[in-house]
Image (cartoon, rainbow, N blue to C red; front, side, top):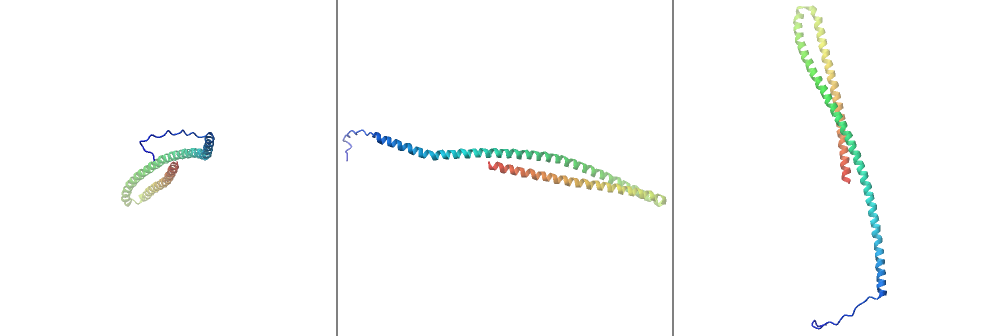
Length: 183
């Protein structure tokens, strides 16, 4: 054991022999080539996967654009059907107002008929006129009822079309969200 107080003898210089350095250099180069091959293969695989992901992204964007276009078309159809429904409701309301007016007219005619009955009791010849007036009022009522039924059927048809458009739009939105979720 060396005493710490004693000076160390000068260490001789260690030099690596040239043949050992050449062999070591060759070995290092061989190891580098062997380890670089798998790294290059992995890099090529990653580049290939990145290209596939870019292609998939482009396809998803195209699908999204198609879904958005379809959604816009459906929105336009919904707006058109909404306008048609509003017009149908307006027509139905006008028909109801007309029916109410007809009913008021009928009520007025009923009062007139009551007056006519009183007169008819006095005059048997007026019975034919009363019968004609009652028939005309009933025909007006039948016409108003038929018009109302036709409007109600048209409103039900338009409501069905509107519900179908809402369902299609919801399905498209869900599909779009699914596509966005896959990104």
